[in-house]
Length: 613
Image 1: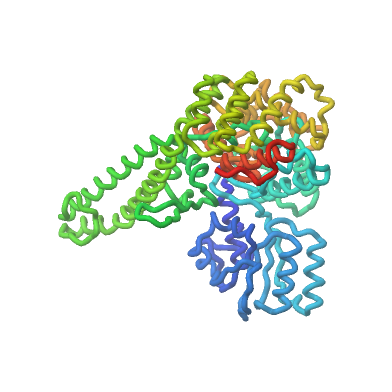
Image 2: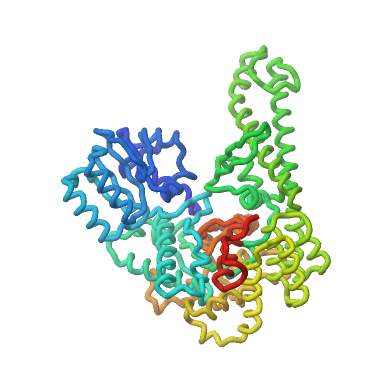
């Protein structure tokens, strides 16, 4: 049984909704208790992709509210709180208890609640004579958002800016690293696995890996730790490998236009928490859910957009054929949509037709949904020439160059301001050598389109530093907070973009780490094993091979990278399994906004807000 993060987190939430009582085979408690659910905005985002309203009803939740909303008392009913452990939430809980809003309070924190905050709860409820209302306090270790079985986000905004800000001090960097480590610890606690940790030397990846290693070591010293059950071995009697990377490892993936369905829907239409709002065919906005319950999304998410359009047509024709077959067997009219009104066949055919109705209806809803989404996407593709952007960016990455006239033609052609800025930055990143006059022409073309070039200037600075610092002595690059080290961490990864084949650097590196064979790309990667003495961390048995991996990208990830890892495991024999996670899921535009902010901090361009499309 492969690691399934979505299933594990859903099980934890189900148990929490049932007052942390064991649940039976149907996923409900043996004794049904009606209750109220209170959550903060962060925990609402954790619940949103996993639990629907009908699921809440199933678990006895009759009302649900945000913690900061004004609420009226509901007597004789227990309340389940699911919130982050912070001072404002604690004060609100104390206020709710002092007003006796609910009969009992079952407090669930998304990560370990610090002792000081626990003391605040105790003293606050004691002073208001409401301590008897606090039934239980639980650390749930669920401070991450699971979007698919193998995809999660820590939902930590702007970590790329924070970690690469030249003005950031040691304490600020340490706080960011600590938050990332807390999120990763929650993921591992939910999966109940202690992995072997691998990461490149230097930069945020090493800082997070080292701090996580120490956190796990300290936790494993306690007798009743979270990893005592099933923690030594996962499926196949083997622990997974956790590969930690920093966004600077491969900048291009966060910027480029991609033409695959899942990535397009996210980048162009703004898929968020598996939900999407688009213009309906008859006007007005329509909201859709795109998750593992949608068979078309699961099966075709990795396909290029033209292939998806063909698949929609294929599914529609198959649906019509099946409807005609049902009508033929039951004496209905050929070509008519099956509505169950013209049934004259024998009893067997009648029963088969009735049984097939829900399945046919569901199929038609899925086809209609993706037809609507594809129509809106097609409009955007034509208006912005997104197919041309994706094709030319791929060619630049492979060839390392582009014809000057072609380059300027794209920048003066169709597309939003940010499409052009992304293309210009992709030109900078992929070019093996920088032609100064060509760069000036690109900047002039961007100014013609009134584009804020701060992000372009920032990446250009990195590119020039790559040349001047490539020969720097690694011994002098130990402190991530040092300005020059930050830029070395960024520019050292530029070479990853210049591979001769189309495979991205991340899946190529993950494949090498999972195989565990000698490889010049990964031989110098650090190895941490929280279960062994620190002196033994270099042991050869810790380097694989591995059947399961958790890949984590610090500084923002996206569906392009997630898709590339899923494609990797689809072609592996024997079958391997990869979970992908990141500090936050970003569209290309959102990542460009972070680069623009860094450009402003470096003194490039205007100090106004991030660019508008």
